[in-house]
Every structure is written in structure tokens, then in C-alpha cells.
Picture 1 (cartoon, rainbow, N blue to C red):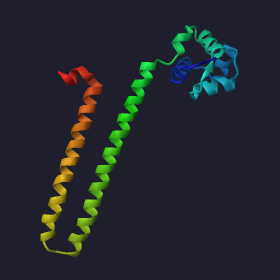
Picture 2 (spheres, rainbow, N blue to C red):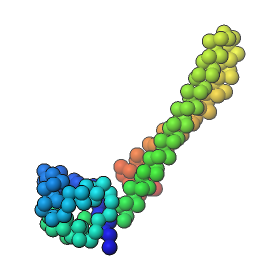
Picture 3 (cartoon, rainbow, N blue to C red):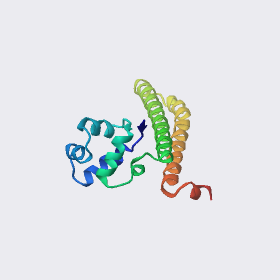
Picture 4 (cartoon, rainbow, N blue to C red):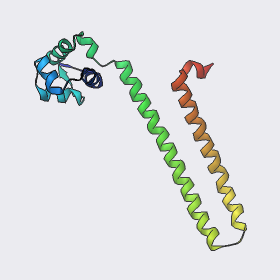
Length: 151
């Protein structure tokens, strides 16, 4: 039977105690490769989890991954990826507008191109402001919680 342990917690506890992986393996009575696999996020056997818990002098459940915490991390990662995609889309769009209309303006000294450039620049500015507002709202929710954003 396998046991899902929190790899970052094990690594953090080991480093707080200034233990090497070899030292932890000796204390727990398990192999070095097992410690390395567990710290890399692979599942641990129940015996390995109990041995690690004994080495850290904690209950085995203290090593387990909190399902709610893992779901929260996954949701945060998904939100960060969506923000990154929005920013990338905005930057690509801005670079395209600047490159196209900048090169046209250099080749054609007529001020008529300025009117057309403004027609494309205004939606681009609105897009940039909306991205800024979305990121500001997300940061506020992360800092103060969702209750503060709803009230």
C-alpha cells in the first residue's frame, strides 16, 4: 500500500535539522534512493512513511499531503498560468501593433496613418487596463482572502 507524503515538508524538515539525505536514511532505516524518490514527489510505502515519521519524531499523518492544500495549490497554479497567457497575448498584440504601424509610419510620412494607429491602439490600451485590473483583483484576493473582495 502506498502513502502520499508531502515531499516539500520532508525536505524542509530535513534541511531545518541540517541533515543530509544519507543521515535521514540512516535514522529512518531506509535506503538513500527511497529518500530521494520521496523528496522528488513519488509515493512512499506505508513502512517508509512510518520510518520517516519516527525519524522526525512525529505522527505518520503529519507527513501526509493535505488534500485541500493540494487542491488550493493546483487552483493557484491554474490561475497563474491563465494570467501568464493573458499577459503573453497582450504583449504579442502590442508588439504586433508597434511593429506594423511603426514600420508603416517610417515608410510613409503622411499623418493619416496616425488615425489608423489610434484605432488599433485604443482597444490595445483597454486590453492592457483590463489585464491590470484582473491581476490587481487576484493579488488582493490572495492577500486579504475572498471574503474581503466580496464585501
